[in-house]
Image (cartoon, rainbow, N blue to C red; front, side, top):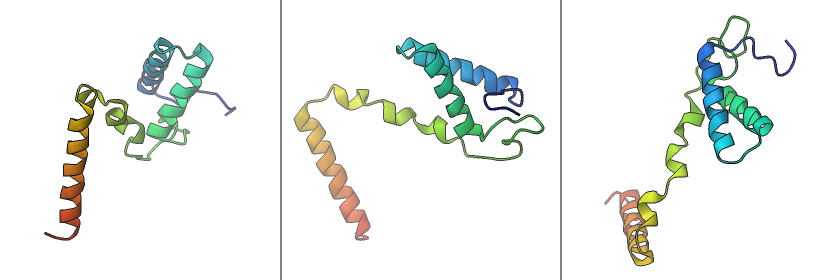
Length: 103
């Protein structure tokens, strides 16, 4: 199977790649680059094509690319003042410090 051949991917994987590429294009990425990134994401998620003969058949990767949602955000803290964010960070640090000591 030559590089770039998508014949071993399922319809669902192809829809997923199209949806990801569309999102990149809406953010100003070129069509070719969006397509490349989309298939890279599908490969990271599924390990390759799920059809018989594809490298991803029968493997479970835990869907690592699907867990990036929280990293994109920041809207929750964006509306808060610097002092509020700093206080929350200090509180979190204290909590982690206390728990690491077991008390």
